Length: 438
Image (tube, rainbow, N blue to C red):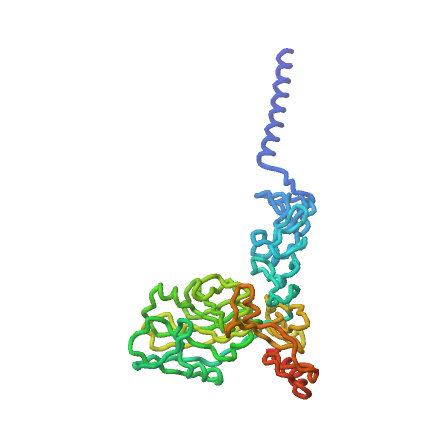
């Protein structure tokens, strides 16, 4: 009897051990999927990895957390942050941006709104490339209210190429703001001809500094609509001996001269293998001549309002005898008219403002006198006053009402000469509208 009882007890122990081994084996080799019921496509998982298939907005092996760009688990709603106005470190390359647990996005300094989709008051032109998010209204200091203009990028181009041959001789070169400029013979022919042009320069010894091309007059004048655009060109030469690094640090790739006093220079951050260049017309890429102080938007816009010279370095080598400039194009923002389908391929000219100007001013940035006003310059002792506070007024001029003694309603905006009858109508309703297009 004792033996049988002992045998039953052993059998029970053996059965319990078998069951335990089974459960140990089952849980060791087979685990439950445990896919989250809100975040997974189904309760099934991969038979080897155990990973669950997640719904859009969820991630993790068990689909138990929100993916980047979503918030409020287990609902995982999209953040919908605008990548143009959201801080760069919050967004990935696809434009998905992270937000707070409450769905609020982290905005750039000049951007506001729960989703960082609006420019703050006094700013415009929401842009992902702009670290501030939006551009500050400039308006030449005459208004603090503006919006992004309805402009698209078009280009002013120089067709053909300009070719320089350097030979033995004693040609006279122009010197402007420390730069040797290729004679006007090449530049003047290029501005009026659609074909290629050439010029020869005779020298007695190797140049110790680079020569510069001067772009034709079609690139000059009021170029405020080129702000934040690109200047593209290509230079080539046959020289093999480059200028010393200290020379290249002294002489810019491009120099802008405007409004008689403003000179800005661009020094590239990297060299070009094939001579192709793209220079952004934005203050971050320019310095003031001489001081090398970073350019400000105010100074750049003053230069662009009356652009007088654009000089491009012709070569980076000392022994070049042949140099060429071609593929020159400058972005210019224009308000395009016509079917919307014809404008879908045009790039929006982000960065060009349209200001709410007071009565006495006109132009997208209030840079010109309004109707019934003319441009007046403040002069002391025959020279412009150049204090920091008054540089804009002194160089661009301020608006003064026309003095026509009641005999005319308008005057020439630059000279103040009164316009009457047909001349008035022709100037204000034909010439000015045409000029504003270009």
